[in-house]
Length: 282
Image (cartoon, helix red, strand yellow):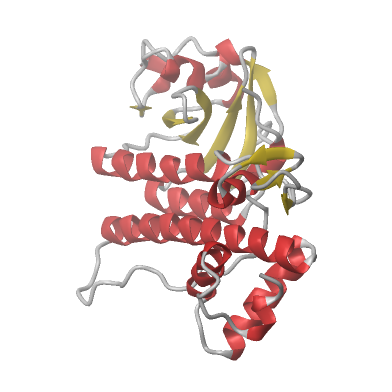
């Protein structure tokens, strides 16, 4: 599976890398893209300049640390030059890597399609607790990369009954909305999990950040589904539908994702009350 580079350009991805950088305290954290033959530094978060390391840099997959990770090498090393699993990797000498940690990012079938990693030119020990948080962050990335989003996909009523998505028939509206998965990167997810009243140590704060990211992605899906309903109902573009939904929510002091749930429910139950601006033709 080859993921387009655009799939990595999303605020949720940036938030994951920023959180991982705080967690690991390494010079660079990055998302690596994988094909059968190549490895690519798709998205980089760096605290310092690193000669020879730029986004888009590719190499033979077998030359990378991540290839060894996926073949069963340890998740982390703080002495790559003397580590039997990593010392012969060409990328080690090419970039002078001393420390590495990596977590696979898998699709729904379990295939590794990317990696979430940290590297440093110095000795950096990564604790098992930090590795576990990194796994959670990799799960957030997997959730973001999973759906194939396309803003040109529009949900329409089929003349034969049911619904169509991009010309493909589907009988269930909810399924159609999920399939459409309209892209709206600027969506505001509404409420987040409540913070503890007790002071949090750094690791606990990072765990909270992961939960907030997971919640934001879940809320985004709900809003995108509502955008699909409004797009069909009002004959508008996805962007116009979102702006209308957001404007109505703000004017009524509502959370966007709460109002979105009502829009979704109204598609199958005309008795669900909606603000006139969203009711349209049902």
